[in-house]
Length: 431
Image (cartoon, rainbow, N blue to C red; front, side, top):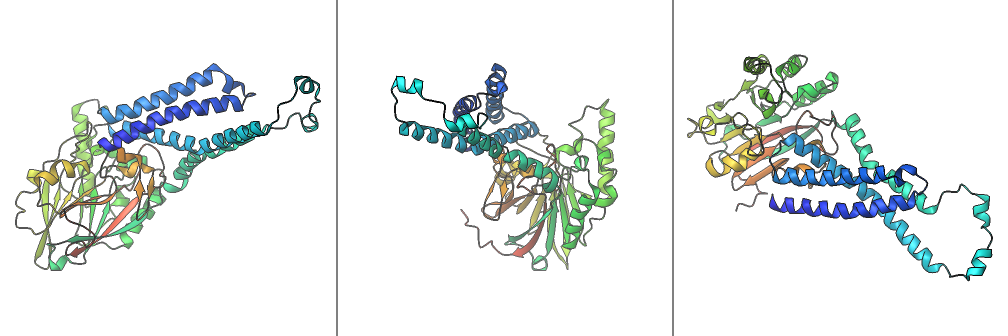
């Protein structure tokens, strides 16, 4: 985290220097634009830039919730990308003007004063200045990230992708070798506005025919009735060996002002009933034994536990691992990936794999088979994909739904299909 923080602070300082360069370029290049020449523009530009930098630095060193951090980082990097796209045009114009000045021969004052207005200028009094043309092209280029956000709202938000992963487990019983596990996370049903598109994602998951399925939390945004229109749809998610679920930080009703504690408790009880009505086995600090032809592995599930910010710590791993010592493999459902490094690694070496969600990959970034980047990595060390330390592993699903920004750019909604294999992962180098 310290390295990421230093990088981000350095970027902030560099961005303020770039701001000075950009503001001068705008004011010098668009002399006829009254708003750009006004004090309101200058004041507003600097207030926004400075407040954004303060917000980013505060989100690093102070304990704000993930929603605030996510919004600030998204705004920061979006602004950064806009300026990065614009800056080359400013530099090109400055270089052009520099060489043009070198080529220009000094004239005698009397000759210069007597020189007629150029024929081209006289013929085209409204002709756009070359600097203004270049800077306008730069503004168009700088708007491309905003266009990307709009595209993500239209096309990315329901563009479900099936990701297939092989999960190597040295102690996996032979009867489980080759078995198929599906995972979805962060449904956030209160954000949906296209039931047909959501149905398409469910159909994709079922088409994979997983033997068992995990859902790793955040069924709703704030309250249980958000699932009213979607309960029957997600109830279609079935698997021969069962569907197992856990709770996320949004499932407790902590983000809504309730008229009474009784009303909040009623909402939570209704959410538990929703899991039951869908046929999902909700694991609240407990475990199940998954049996195939006489051999068993453990499925453990805890309530939400997050080490960052003010996220609730309801999870109790000591209860979840109870009476599982004889099981050769233990798979843990825990919504927040920070739980892995904070408690699982130091205190529970018997847990083979933890499955999480929560980060959404911030719904913005780049994700390929060999490379991934998102602003969320400045908040979470493990934020998407498969991680390992020695024999213990963590998988972070970037989510089925969305929250806040109603779109996804680069980080698309995920359905994960794991093939469980017996043996050590040949790609892992154990420390």
